[in-house]
Length: 295
Image: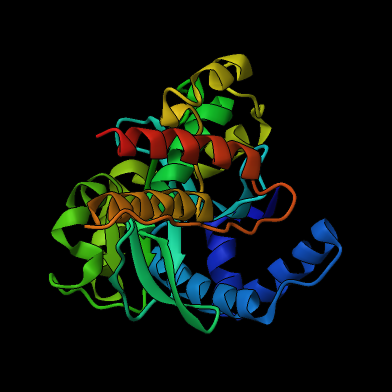
């Protein structure tokens, strides 16, 4: 399920007329039977305008665009996916995670940063890790990508941030992540366009978009194999967004407790509603904590 699927030229037209947020708001209500938050609507308005501007300036007018695409068998939605063909005529889709962040600080949790979200500072996934998890999840759960019919790449566009090498986003500890799943800032729009062009330069994205939409949602690995592996191998499940933050925060507390001069007990309370993956997360945290505690 997605809130928008269409041609890139139509997306650009709606975004530049300030109509895209209203379109998504109506589609959201039709799909979920309640209204999205004002914060989410505002983020659509701001971020999608910047994404549309980048596509327009880069000449991406023969491509497919998916917005707010719900990941198979999950409640999570990715921000934007652009489809097309590479110069070798290979079908590709590129996930683009959009962020309005203007200030980013370090976090003590692996693959996380601290920024203002929902009116206060929170630990959140580094955008490269977040979009990388989406990519990995789709490779596992969507036949168009798991069977190789459509190639898949991903990146993040932090359009309110200017590039500074000393920014936490580009800190040495995130270097491998950013190398695999690039981050582009607002003043590096040309680099984003070049990245998209490498994979989508020939256009013809509508047919690729149709392939993505019509392909089946099915795990590429059997559920029993996941279950058998979950405790011995924490990678058997792909954690998404806040699940990954919680997992790394638990491991950070385990490390801190193990390094303390006096042994101390630590309790981590995790709040999550139905469908947020708490049972699986408990198993993964347990296995990960045992592994960390034994090293």
